[in-house]
Image (tube, rainbow, N blue to C red):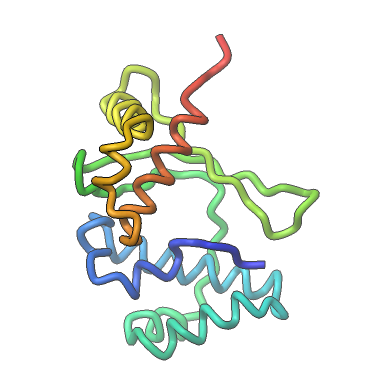
Length: 161
């Protein structure tokens, strides 16, 4: 089942090219991932609705969808541009949850003391500030993604010693 996801934002958000420095790769990967999920869950109404919406609203999506590319995203490095802190290269691991088929947790884990780690720690510290939350413009999809990323980082930055 498809849950709230930024998968379609690559095609529907006019600011996505600013957020994804490697927009072509992000767009190709997003469509290939959706194609993979469609194979796993062909009856998923949320997924088919998302694909229908993207097909109706984005020629870029339609061109990629027609290629029938499939890709499993298990690990890699996400390149993104955060509107407040700039470019980030974030290593990630995707973990499927056997108890909930189709549900996946993606863990971003920059190296200790790396610039990315310091930047994510800074973002995480902002989640404690009411002013910072207001500055994120909660109605903006990209701001919501930034806030969610900061919350995720806050949760995942505590490593066992």
